[in-house]
Image (tube, rainbow, N blue to C red; front, top):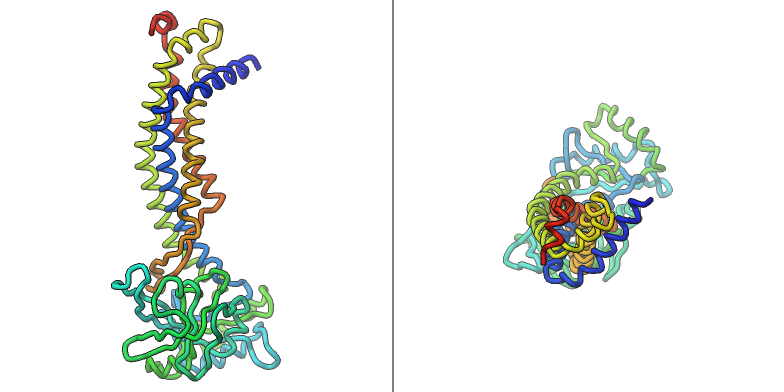
Length: 396
């Protein structure tokens, strides 16, 4: 208890004198805050991208793809196969009608609002009329639903925010084809909001796909119905398909990009952190030199070496915590909710998402700042603890 009281007393004294060393302390605080801003903002990209994909699926829905396919882009089967899939047990039904939508997935070029001279790949999905009942989390927020059998389309909220010619009333030109936008929809912030939806039969004719589809999206009777639904399809000799739960399918798609962004974020933060640590070391060496007589006096009065060591490290970590909090606040205000889009390497198309500065990321940033503060204060603390008392008392 005596040791703890000594540490608390010396630490409190050191923290109270920080304003007297404001200029040198500010160097450490600003350096650490800058690292935290970059660290948190880069990781918020991964968090936003992951949320857009992982939040897109439902455990009550399943995707049926051709065997061996890793995405809708590489899948495909004939119309009769889709009819067989809709007969599987475990499907939810609306009366006698199975809640399963056979769909087509193509990619078109659209210029971004942020860089109109650089077109990006945007998914254009053909759906069946039952699709809106299968996706019960989708709602029209502007305009109206398109009419089947026409060239009308609706666009997701993310696509509407990121790409031009996606306002209600606009016409999307894709080669010689024209699609008239009649509505904007939202889907709980999921990846579907990056897509454009139209009538699947119209898309088949326009893109000369015949009676073919790439995926069947099915609504299940319950989450547990996936087993019977999948077993019936994968053992059916008429078919060569694979079944994935929708939320698991999209979560798997997010892993590659999320891991890449996180690796970049930790790499950048590590390199910048080295500079911030050196700034903290210099700050604390200055603090030790300024307080040399004060520290020697305390030791002469009976304060032990461990108390001095802990107090210097504690002061450095206090500066780190302040820098971490400031950096986290700047990252939250500046980046949280910022809308952008990037490539999904599984489908080679854009995914619109918003940066997500989560409480977990803010906590991680503060922990990283405390770590930099600890390392930055360790060596100056050792010097302070080893400083000869007579020598220090003679310093001006």
